[in-house]
Image (cartoon, rainbow, N blue to C red; front, side, top):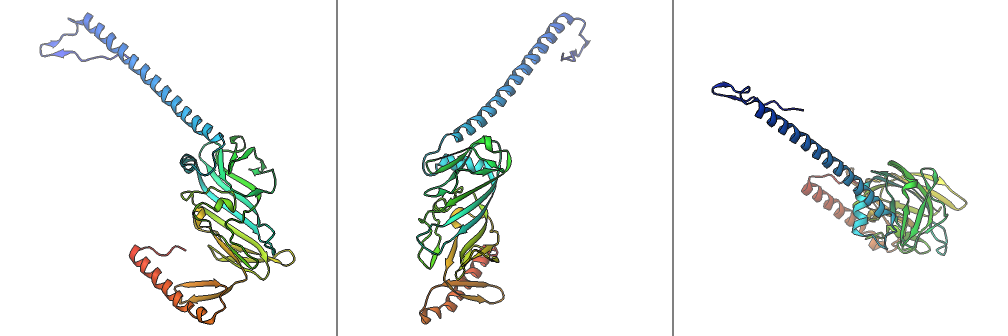
Length: 306
């Protein structure tokens, strides 16, 4: 667009006197403005291309099979692209310690943009070569302690994965009459496939099929009991608040319990102690827990969230 400059001086309008020079100047300014606009368009095109290349490069790096363990780069990429993670976990705990604990996982997550997704897995076996992703058999690779899902099976936004697995005994601390999980610092992936990094908090819905004379405790209260196969029962737990993988836990077995309830606090201790003198110490332990929580709530000005 041409630019018209108000060339006025103190002696009146001098545009006619210098019209030839003015027209040359106007043409010069117009050409320069058009050139600047052209450069800005090129710059915007370059920026768009750079953004596309950056996204493409990020996706392509994920397609390569990661090394064992969880690298800083993998953790950062997942944190940036994956959110709203939910685990639905169903475990079957057999009577015999010689039988492995098996499970079913339904994993839901939101994917910021289309890109390969990598889950962590170590010493856990898949019960089937077929993994369902959004209701269809997934295209994936199983290498070096990871399951890598191809973008061909994923979609931007919400995704749902379903698979069966056999847990490793590494984190189950198991004997014939009880077991308990201990997933610190990075052992959740030995129990079930997951995003095993602390900054990817998720909600957990847990269901345990276990011997009918056993009881169980987890991060949240029990919501339901169901009769299972002969000699077994199922216990369902309420969904958790967002937790890191290493904080997810459950205990199951032939356990005794004692409950403290003062109207404000309610605690239950599960134990296998037989010495009456030691069992009598539970009242003291409960009160110490109560006073500790009250002190922390006052100090932090935050209510205990669980």
